[in-house]
Image (tube, rainbow, N blue to C red):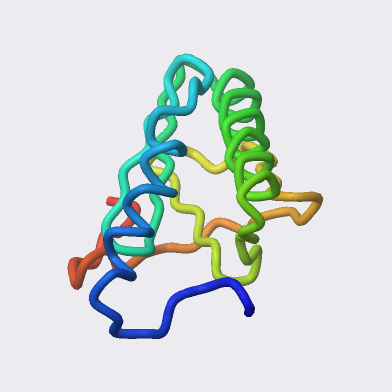
Length: 115
């Protein structure tokens, strides 16, 4: 038997909620907050300076990636989007891959842009 749930299965969302609940309760650095909807996870990071933002975001992403390893889930760096609402001076990485800032992201059908 292999792991996973059939797409559209009745128990799939409940099992995902059970797994994801652990991530939502993970202790993250100050200024890091996780939001989730279905299978999308959003990490919001706030900080007083670019250096603090870089440190908190990288540490927060590290915790998330480590949680994923424990539950045998991988996050795709190529599918990960990074947007800043202040100057983009931070170097943010996920699992050894540097993330590039994008001018806008689509979240639940709503487009968020830098402004």
